[in-house]
Length: 147
Image 1: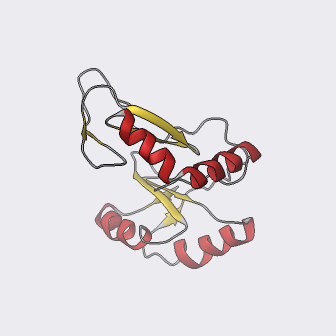
Image 2 (image 1 turned 120 degrees about the vertical axis):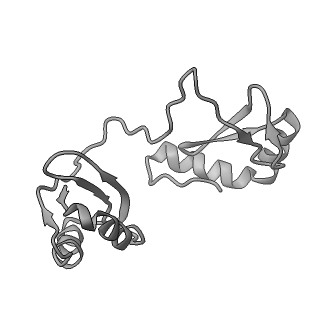
């Protein structure tokens, strides 16, 4: 959680956004007006990131940091409400998905299709990748998304 002068919010966000470790940047209300979600492979690397990347930012002070030790629920998807709508494109043919899509769970993600033919064709074309992702998910390994 960072305290960033309002005049520097855009420039600080622009300097942090391209970094591989930075996964999310949120502007908030309150004393800490920016939250930066950082992912590193170790606590030593996190400390190095804070010291070498965050600390030198002009006018920026770190209000606090927390290390996530366990994730109980993490929904990154978009919540759709009745008054909202979304357009889907078929993950196989690229055509518009009208009505209820045909879906396929792949790893921790979902793929959407306009028809059973596209769903079957996708499964056939990417069968080995789908099997590999399913095996990784069952073993609890890092999640990969088929793109």
